[in-house]
Image (spheres, rainbow, N blue to C red):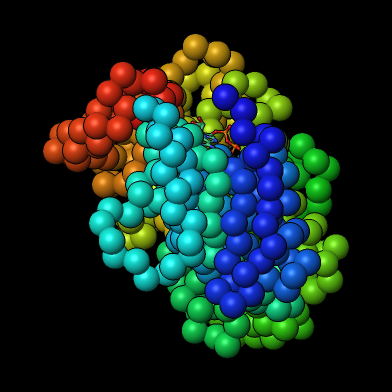
Length: 364
Ligand SMILES: Cc1cc2nc3c(=O)[nH]c(=O)nc-3n(C[C@H](O)[C@H](O)[C@H](O)COP(=O)(O)OP(=O)(O)OC[C@H]3O[C@@H](n4cnc5c(N)ncnc54)[C@H](O)[C@@H]3O)c2cc1C
């Protein structure tokens, strides 16, 4: 099923700050439509020009603005969808307060196409945060990186993004795209902040002198320079995937245990036989790590399973953003109890008794 032609974008309801769009419109189209009318859509990710709004809702996509706006579910006011029996549910009136029974929009959001086909959504928009500065900071540990997120938050500027990249991820992207190492000295971790500070770099003033900052602080004020710093983060997947079979694990861990888990994942990846390259990077403040491991074996799932089992030992989630799909369906029990999986299966059986919608997805 393709939803690409369901690409209508209605005019913005300025009174409520909401917008109704067809599920086939791309995320980029919605962002541009909102921006042209003085608004902002709260979700952003590197696949913006290929990902459809329906796809981002079906996967409850996160991305680089979760720290500021929450995930896709937090932007969703209403939904229209076709269920397995052909009935159409439509609730696009845009009421923020509506406690009449189950919230079907939230239920379908993140259901990965297993409960119905989303055809349109009603989205909440935000007022733009204004001009921003982007800064790259070297730190020696995850603990220091997390303490700097707190420092940034306590300053006057709103934190729009807080991303972390370890040394091997930085080396990989520099090598793949011929980018210069951005600091004067080597650092074990690079922390990328985007702050809504009027675009003059003032948001970084209380960070510059902080003892957790290793060496120099690189701040970009111009649009082109901001993009250049973001390249180190946004090109990570591409940088790893060109080397061989790319295992791209997307996990989350409770923040107090993040540092320990990340170190264990790195050590584990380094010790795996046949590994060509590895790195850990991700959305720091959300506790969301992307574990990139490249090897040469197209049939190997052992690498993935080892990462997911490690994350489960830290009581994390085996899928922070990308969903369970078919590949991780057999591992759902690592982070969901039998009672939870039983309740989910009951919902699936009630709405799709013949199992027509994305069979094999989420449940093995
Ligand atoms: C370079 C890159 C960077 C990315 N970065 C991030 C990131 O930072 N954060 C993040 O969360 N994700 C990220 N993603 C994943 C991204 O969220 C998904 O690719 C996107 O949300 C899916 O949109 P799509 O239209 O491509 O859906 P597809 O990939 O086509 O589908 C995804 C799933 O949703 C289902 N689906 C799609 N449309 C509908 C619909 N209308 N109704 C019901 N089910 C539907 C499909 O059946 C499938 O199960 C990234 C992807 C890429 C390629």
